[in-house]
Image (tube, rainbow, N blue to C red):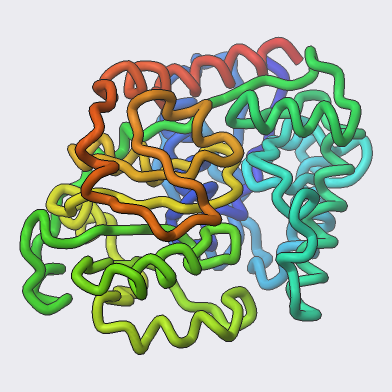
Length: 354
């Protein structure tokens, strides 16, 4: 195998979404390696945690990750050149030009919805994201993504040849190793099984918290628990009134165990997002036995097929009891299809082809 260096920028953030995917895939990739393989992980000095691998070598940087652009474009790129390795990036970013090796683009949200980036800071973030979409599509030897939906968008927007793109699905295997922490029910005021709806995700515009808010206004007898961090520069001002609704509990950031406990006991998991490259939380909820109510937008119908209940993300006036009464298929085939073990094998094969 060609020598690869993994960008460890995901080690400086909480394990949600892309960061969780990177952590889990790397662990399973490590299990596939043989002695002749040469893959290393380049770790920022301020990493929150450092994984312990059997085969992937750990290279610790003396530099802390304080700026993602500086880390990705300068520090990590220099490390790739120093070690004579091809870059492997999981976080929608990559070194520039020929140093860009294999990189994931999970979705092109910043390209599709530029108006969602409203503040000056967010506009800079959106521009940085769009720049990296272009850089990866132009310069990477291998472009990885997480759904046919995202693959088609990458091909349509950036003209990437189909043969250059590999679909590496996400998965929910990690939920099997998490112990449910039921102390969360006391923390949130004595919630009871089957009496609340649960939603999870970063509270950015695309997660469509407005749907929850407007639905809760219409159906005051329904209780919603929302996990995520309220960011003033991401959530529009009108959503501040969500705090005034007595049937919505803003739980803030929760541990994996607390999330699992809520998924196991909720009436249903609600995910009204209008743009996802894959959309992992509903799969995690299904693995905990919860019915899922998700939007009929972007990649979600592709990923979940007839195993979910669907809503229009622009129509909050929905009778959820009537919706949940409709039959859906067993999610068992999804757990087989979206397996992190299988995804790691596919990534390993793709890397070996470079």
